[in-house]
Length: 374
Image 1 (cartoon, rainbow, N blue to C red):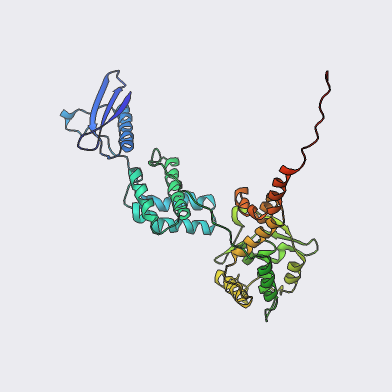
Image 2 (image 1 turned 30 degrees about the vertical axis):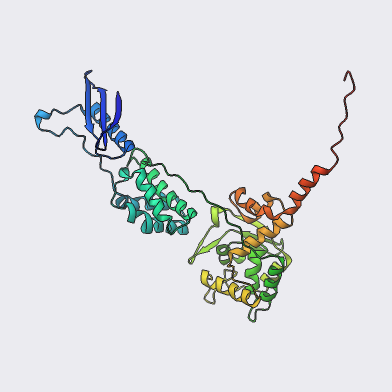
Protein backbone atom coordinates (compact mmCIF):
# COMPACT_ATOMS: atom_id res chain seq x y z
CA UNK A 1 0.00 0.00 0.00
CA UNK A 2 1.54 3.26 -1.11
CA UNK A 3 0.45 6.85 -1.62
CA UNK A 4 2.68 9.00 -3.82
CA UNK A 5 2.39 12.70 -4.55
CA UNK A 6 3.53 14.29 -7.83
CA UNK A 7 3.26 17.97 -8.76
CA UNK A 8 1.31 18.96 -11.86
CA UNK A 9 2.99 21.31 -14.29
CA UNK A 10 0.06 23.69 -14.18
CA UNK A 11 -0.15 23.63 -10.39
CA UNK A 12 -1.55 21.31 -7.79
CA UNK A 13 -0.70 17.69 -7.09
CA UNK A 14 -1.52 14.26 -8.46
CA UNK A 15 -2.22 11.56 -5.90
CA UNK A 16 -1.14 8.05 -6.95
CA UNK A 17 -2.63 5.30 -4.76
CA UNK A 18 -1.51 1.66 -4.99
CA UNK A 19 -3.35 -0.70 -2.65
CA UNK A 20 -4.44 -4.33 -2.27
CA UNK A 21 -8.16 -4.72 -1.67
CA UNK A 22 -9.74 -7.14 0.85
CA UNK A 23 -10.58 -9.52 -2.05
CA UNK A 24 -6.87 -9.83 -2.80
CA UNK A 25 -6.90 -7.78 -6.00
CA UNK A 26 -4.56 -4.87 -6.58
CA UNK A 27 -6.06 -1.48 -7.26
CA UNK A 28 -4.48 1.72 -8.53
CA UNK A 29 -5.94 5.23 -8.68
CA UNK A 30 -4.40 8.43 -9.94
CA UNK A 31 -6.33 11.60 -9.20
CA UNK A 32 -5.77 15.31 -8.94
CA UNK A 33 -5.87 16.41 -5.33
CA UNK A 34 -8.59 18.90 -4.33
CA UNK A 35 -5.98 20.65 -2.15
CA UNK A 36 -3.22 23.02 -3.22
CA UNK A 37 -0.56 22.08 -0.65
CA UNK A 38 1.55 18.93 -0.68
CA UNK A 39 0.84 18.05 2.96
CA UNK A 40 -2.93 18.40 2.56
CA UNK A 41 -2.82 16.38 -0.67
CA UNK A 42 -0.94 13.58 1.08
CA UNK A 43 -3.52 13.52 3.87
CA UNK A 44 -6.32 13.41 1.33
CA UNK A 45 -4.61 10.49 -0.45
CA UNK A 46 -4.27 8.54 2.78
CA UNK A 47 -7.93 9.11 3.62
CA UNK A 48 -8.86 7.86 0.15
CA UNK A 49 -6.65 4.80 0.61
CA UNK A 50 -8.40 3.93 3.88
CA UNK A 51 -11.76 4.35 2.20
CA UNK A 52 -10.79 1.93 -0.58
CA UNK A 53 -9.69 -0.69 1.96
CA UNK A 54 -13.09 -0.56 3.65
CA UNK A 55 -15.48 -0.02 0.75
CA UNK A 56 -13.53 -1.03 -2.32
CA UNK A 57 -13.56 0.93 -5.60
CA UNK A 58 -16.94 1.92 -7.03
CA UNK A 59 -17.53 1.22 -10.69
CA UNK A 60 -17.94 4.25 -12.87
CA UNK A 61 -20.40 2.32 -15.01
CA UNK A 62 -22.86 2.22 -12.13
CA UNK A 63 -23.08 5.98 -12.23
CA UNK A 64 -21.98 6.24 -8.61
CA UNK A 65 -19.45 8.83 -7.59
CA UNK A 66 -16.06 7.22 -7.11
CA UNK A 67 -14.75 9.96 -4.87
CA UNK A 68 -14.61 9.36 -1.15
CA UNK A 69 -17.39 11.17 0.69
CA UNK A 70 -15.92 14.11 2.52
CA UNK A 71 -15.59 13.78 6.22
CA UNK A 72 -17.86 16.18 8.08
CA UNK A 73 -15.27 18.51 9.55
CA UNK A 74 -16.53 21.69 11.24
CA UNK A 75 -15.27 25.16 10.52
CA UNK A 76 -13.30 27.13 13.09
CA UNK A 77 -16.41 29.19 13.85
CA UNK A 78 -18.47 26.04 14.42
CA UNK A 79 -15.87 24.29 16.58
CA UNK A 80 -14.75 27.28 18.72
CA UNK A 81 -17.69 27.22 21.22
CA UNK A 82 -17.23 23.47 21.71
CA UNK A 83 -13.51 24.01 22.37
CA UNK A 84 -14.12 26.78 24.91
CA UNK A 85 -16.76 24.81 26.82
CA UNK A 86 -15.16 21.37 26.66
CA UNK A 87 -11.44 22.08 26.72
CA UNK A 88 -10.93 25.46 28.39
CA UNK A 89 -13.77 25.66 30.91
CA UNK A 90 -13.97 21.88 31.20
CA UNK A 91 -10.43 21.75 32.57
CA UNK A 92 -11.12 24.37 35.22
CA UNK A 93 -9.38 27.36 33.65
CA UNK A 94 -9.51 30.56 35.68
CA UNK A 95 -12.00 33.23 34.52
CA UNK A 96 -9.12 35.46 33.41
CA UNK A 97 -7.73 32.68 31.21
CA UNK A 98 -11.15 31.92 29.72
CA UNK A 99 -11.57 35.57 28.82
CA UNK A 100 -8.11 35.65 27.23
CA UNK A 101 -8.92 32.59 25.07
CA UNK A 102 -12.28 34.04 24.02
CA UNK A 103 -10.60 37.35 23.13
CA UNK A 104 -8.00 35.59 20.95
CA UNK A 105 -10.79 33.75 19.13
CA UNK A 106 -13.14 36.73 18.75
CA UNK A 107 -10.60 39.35 17.68
CA UNK A 108 -7.98 37.38 15.78
CA UNK A 109 -8.56 33.70 14.96
CA UNK A 110 -12.20 33.63 13.86
CA UNK A 111 -12.01 36.77 11.67
CA UNK A 112 -9.08 35.12 9.85
CA UNK A 113 -10.17 31.46 9.72
CA UNK A 114 -13.80 31.33 10.87
CA UNK A 115 -15.23 30.05 7.55
CA UNK A 116 -12.38 27.58 6.98
CA UNK A 117 -12.69 23.90 7.94
CA UNK A 118 -10.25 22.77 10.61
CA UNK A 119 -8.47 20.42 8.20
CA UNK A 120 -8.20 23.06 5.48
CA UNK A 121 -5.79 25.32 7.36
CA UNK A 122 -2.51 25.41 5.47
CA UNK A 123 0.96 26.53 6.47
CA UNK A 124 0.87 29.56 4.21
CA UNK A 125 -2.41 30.64 5.82
CA UNK A 126 -0.75 30.56 9.22
CA UNK A 127 2.38 32.42 8.12
CA UNK A 128 0.31 35.19 6.50
CA UNK A 129 -1.78 35.38 9.68
CA UNK A 130 1.36 35.86 11.80
CA UNK A 131 2.71 38.48 9.42
CA UNK A 132 -0.55 40.43 9.64
CA UNK A 133 -0.52 40.26 13.43
CA UNK A 134 3.09 41.44 13.44
CA UNK A 135 2.00 44.80 12.03
CA UNK A 136 0.32 45.74 15.31
CA UNK A 137 1.22 43.08 17.88
CA UNK A 138 4.42 42.10 19.70
CA UNK A 139 5.94 38.63 19.34
CA UNK A 140 4.84 37.59 22.84
CA UNK A 141 1.21 38.43 22.02
CA UNK A 142 1.44 36.57 18.70
CA UNK A 143 2.80 33.51 20.52
CA UNK A 144 -0.09 33.63 22.98
CA UNK A 145 -2.60 33.74 20.10
CA UNK A 146 -0.79 30.84 18.41
CA UNK A 147 -1.02 28.86 21.65
CA UNK A 148 -4.80 29.25 21.60
CA UNK A 149 -4.88 28.11 17.97
CA UNK A 150 -2.64 25.15 18.77
CA UNK A 151 -4.68 23.94 21.76
CA UNK A 152 -7.88 24.26 19.70
CA UNK A 153 -6.46 22.06 16.95
CA UNK A 154 -5.04 19.55 19.44
CA UNK A 155 -8.44 19.29 21.10
CA UNK A 156 -9.97 18.56 17.69
CA UNK A 157 -7.44 15.75 17.18
CA UNK A 158 -8.06 14.32 20.67
CA UNK A 159 -11.81 14.32 20.03
CA UNK A 160 -11.30 12.67 16.60
CA UNK A 161 -12.75 15.65 14.75
CA UNK A 162 -9.61 15.75 12.58
CA UNK A 163 -6.82 13.19 12.25
CA UNK A 164 -3.86 15.47 12.84
CA UNK A 165 -2.90 19.10 13.35
CA UNK A 166 -2.72 20.40 9.77
CA UNK A 167 0.09 22.93 10.31
CA UNK A 168 3.35 23.32 12.21
CA UNK A 169 3.03 26.13 14.71
CA UNK A 170 6.38 27.85 15.23
CA UNK A 171 6.81 30.27 18.11
CA UNK A 172 8.45 33.61 17.46
CA UNK A 173 11.56 34.70 19.31
CA UNK A 174 10.82 36.93 22.28
CA UNK A 175 13.44 39.24 23.76
CA UNK A 176 12.82 39.54 27.48
CA UNK A 177 12.49 43.19 28.41
CA UNK A 178 14.30 44.78 31.32
CA UNK A 179 12.32 44.71 34.55
CA UNK A 180 11.46 48.22 35.76
CA UNK A 181 11.53 48.74 39.53
CA UNK A 182 11.90 51.39 42.23
CA UNK A 183 15.49 51.72 43.43
CA UNK A 184 16.21 51.87 47.15
CA UNK A 185 15.84 55.66 47.43
CA UNK A 186 12.66 55.72 45.32
CA UNK A 187 11.06 52.97 47.36
CA UNK A 188 11.95 54.78 50.58
CA UNK A 189 10.29 57.95 49.24
CA UNK A 190 7.25 55.94 48.17
CA UNK A 191 6.89 54.49 51.67
CA UNK A 192 7.38 57.91 53.25
CA UNK A 193 4.64 59.62 51.25
CA UNK A 194 2.29 56.63 51.42
CA UNK A 195 2.52 56.87 55.22
CA UNK A 196 1.42 60.52 55.02
CA UNK A 197 -1.95 59.64 53.46
CA UNK A 198 -4.54 61.86 55.15
CA UNK A 199 -7.25 59.23 55.61
CA UNK A 200 -5.91 55.76 56.52
CA UNK A 201 -3.05 53.30 56.09
CA UNK A 202 -4.43 51.78 52.89
CA UNK A 203 -1.88 53.44 50.61
CA UNK A 204 1.03 52.29 52.76
CA UNK A 205 -0.40 48.77 52.95
CA UNK A 206 -0.61 48.64 49.14
CA UNK A 207 3.00 49.79 48.76
CA UNK A 208 4.31 47.32 51.32
CA UNK A 209 2.23 44.33 50.22
CA UNK A 210 3.79 44.74 46.78
CA UNK A 211 7.29 45.92 47.70
CA UNK A 212 7.90 44.03 50.97
CA UNK A 213 5.89 40.86 50.26
CA UNK A 214 5.94 40.64 46.45
CA UNK A 215 2.19 40.18 46.02
CA UNK A 216 0.69 40.57 42.56
CA UNK A 217 -1.97 43.26 42.18
CA UNK A 218 -4.76 40.66 42.11
CA UNK A 219 -3.32 39.01 45.23
CA UNK A 220 -3.32 42.37 47.03
CA UNK A 221 -6.97 42.93 46.11
CA UNK A 222 -7.93 39.38 47.16
CA UNK A 223 -6.08 39.26 50.49
CA UNK A 224 -8.34 38.06 53.34
CA UNK A 225 -7.91 38.83 57.02
CA UNK A 226 -7.93 35.11 57.82
CA UNK A 227 -4.80 34.79 55.65
CA UNK A 228 -2.82 36.88 58.16
CA UNK A 229 -1.25 35.39 61.29
CA UNK A 230 0.10 38.27 63.37
CA UNK A 231 1.23 35.98 66.21
CA UNK A 232 3.48 33.94 63.96
CA UNK A 233 4.15 36.92 61.67
CA UNK A 234 2.97 35.01 58.59
CA UNK A 235 1.02 36.03 55.51
CA UNK A 236 -0.51 33.29 53.34
CA UNK A 237 -1.07 34.11 49.67
CA UNK A 238 -4.02 31.88 48.83
CA UNK A 239 -6.49 34.15 47.02
CA UNK A 240 -6.51 36.59 44.11
CA UNK A 241 -9.20 38.93 42.80
CA UNK A 242 -10.20 39.27 39.17
CA UNK A 243 -13.14 41.46 38.16
CA UNK A 244 -15.02 40.88 41.37
CA UNK A 245 -14.30 37.15 41.50
CA UNK A 246 -12.03 35.56 44.11
CA UNK A 247 -9.85 32.80 42.68
CA UNK A 248 -6.61 31.04 43.58
CA UNK A 249 -3.27 32.73 42.82
CA UNK A 250 -1.52 32.42 39.48
CA UNK A 251 -0.42 28.84 38.72
CA UNK A 252 -2.45 27.86 41.86
CA UNK A 253 0.74 28.36 43.88
CA UNK A 254 -0.22 29.06 47.49
CA UNK A 255 2.74 30.41 49.43
CA UNK A 256 3.47 31.52 53.00
CA UNK A 257 5.59 34.63 53.59
CA UNK A 258 7.11 36.22 56.68
CA UNK A 259 6.06 39.86 57.09
CA UNK A 260 8.43 42.77 57.61
CA UNK A 261 7.78 44.72 60.79
CA UNK A 262 6.69 47.79 58.83
CA UNK A 263 4.20 45.73 56.79
CA UNK A 264 2.72 44.16 59.93
CA UNK A 265 2.43 47.58 61.55
CA UNK A 266 0.64 49.06 58.50
CA UNK A 267 -1.79 46.14 58.32
CA UNK A 268 -2.65 46.44 62.03
CA UNK A 269 -3.81 50.01 61.40
CA UNK A 270 -6.50 48.94 58.92
CA UNK A 271 -10.12 48.39 59.96
CA UNK A 272 -11.14 44.75 60.26
CA UNK A 273 -14.88 45.09 59.75
CA UNK A 274 -14.75 43.41 56.33
CA UNK A 275 -13.61 40.03 55.03
CA UNK A 276 -11.02 41.54 52.69
CA UNK A 277 -8.00 43.44 53.99
CA UNK A 278 -8.41 46.12 51.32
CA UNK A 279 -11.97 46.76 50.22
CA UNK A 280 -14.33 49.47 49.11
CA UNK A 281 -16.79 50.92 51.68
CA UNK A 282 -19.39 48.49 50.32
CA UNK A 283 -17.13 45.55 51.17
CA UNK A 284 -16.47 44.78 47.51
CA UNK A 285 -12.83 44.25 46.43
CA UNK A 286 -10.85 47.18 45.16
CA UNK A 287 -11.02 47.34 41.38
CA UNK A 288 -7.95 47.38 39.15
CA UNK A 289 -8.58 51.06 38.46
CA UNK A 290 -8.95 52.05 42.13
CA UNK A 291 -5.74 50.27 43.14
CA UNK A 292 -3.80 51.90 40.30
CA UNK A 293 -5.30 55.30 41.10
CA UNK A 294 -4.22 55.14 44.75
CA UNK A 295 -0.67 54.14 43.85
CA UNK A 296 -0.48 56.81 41.14
CA UNK A 297 -1.48 59.44 43.67
CA UNK A 298 1.31 58.38 46.05
CA UNK A 299 3.86 58.36 43.22
CA UNK A 300 2.87 61.88 42.27
CA UNK A 301 3.25 63.17 45.84
CA UNK A 302 6.67 61.48 46.05
CA UNK A 303 7.79 63.07 42.78
CA UNK A 304 8.06 59.72 40.99
CA UNK A 305 6.76 58.80 37.57
CA UNK A 306 3.83 56.40 37.28
CA UNK A 307 5.16 52.85 37.04
CA UNK A 308 2.06 50.83 37.98
CA UNK A 309 1.27 48.29 40.72
CA UNK A 310 3.22 45.39 39.19
CA UNK A 311 6.42 47.45 39.52
CA UNK A 312 6.14 46.94 43.28
CA UNK A 313 6.49 43.19 42.74
CA UNK A 314 9.50 43.78 40.47
CA UNK A 315 10.93 45.96 43.25
CA UNK A 316 10.52 43.13 45.76
CA UNK A 317 12.40 40.63 43.55
CA UNK A 318 15.04 43.15 42.46
CA UNK A 319 15.88 44.31 45.99
CA UNK A 320 16.24 40.71 47.15
CA UNK A 321 18.57 39.97 44.23
CA UNK A 322 20.66 43.09 44.92
CA UNK A 323 21.04 41.93 48.52
CA UNK A 324 22.46 38.61 47.34
CA UNK A 325 19.48 36.36 48.10
CA UNK A 326 19.72 33.07 46.12
CA UNK A 327 17.46 32.69 43.09
CA UNK A 328 15.70 29.62 44.51
CA UNK A 329 14.65 31.56 47.60
CA UNK A 330 13.34 34.46 45.51
CA UNK A 331 11.43 32.00 43.33
CA UNK A 332 9.75 30.51 46.39
CA UNK A 333 8.86 33.88 47.93
CA UNK A 334 7.54 35.33 44.68
CA UNK A 335 5.67 32.19 43.62
CA UNK A 336 7.34 31.99 40.22
CA UNK A 337 6.44 28.81 38.35
CA UNK A 338 9.88 28.58 36.77
CA UNK A 339 13.38 29.55 37.85
CA UNK A 340 13.80 31.10 34.39
CA UNK A 341 11.44 33.90 35.45
CA UNK A 342 13.42 34.52 38.63
CA UNK A 343 16.75 34.60 36.79
CA UNK A 344 15.69 37.78 34.99
CA UNK A 345 16.46 39.59 38.24
CA UNK A 346 19.76 37.93 39.06
CA UNK A 347 21.86 40.27 36.93
CA UNK A 348 21.16 42.79 39.72
CA UNK A 349 23.12 40.68 42.21
CA UNK A 350 26.71 41.89 41.78
CA UNK A 351 28.04 40.11 44.84
CA UNK A 352 28.05 36.61 43.39
CA UNK A 353 29.59 37.54 40.06
CA UNK A 354 32.21 39.81 41.66
CA UNK A 355 33.23 37.04 44.04
CA UNK A 356 33.39 34.54 41.17
CA UNK A 357 35.81 36.70 39.15
CA UNK A 358 37.86 37.56 42.23
CA UNK A 359 38.31 33.83 42.81
CA UNK A 360 40.36 33.66 39.61
CA UNK A 361 43.11 35.75 41.24
CA UNK A 362 43.08 33.88 44.55
CA UNK A 363 45.84 31.37 45.29
CA UNK A 364 45.04 27.93 43.95
CA UNK A 365 43.74 25.41 46.44
CA UNK A 366 46.46 23.40 48.17
CA UNK A 367 46.96 19.98 46.66
CA UNK A 368 49.14 17.36 48.26
CA UNK A 369 51.50 15.61 45.85
CA UNK A 370 51.26 11.87 46.33
CA UNK A 371 54.49 10.22 47.39
CA UNK A 372 56.07 7.56 45.15
CA UNK A 373 54.52 4.18 45.73
CA UNK A 374 51.28 5.54 47.16
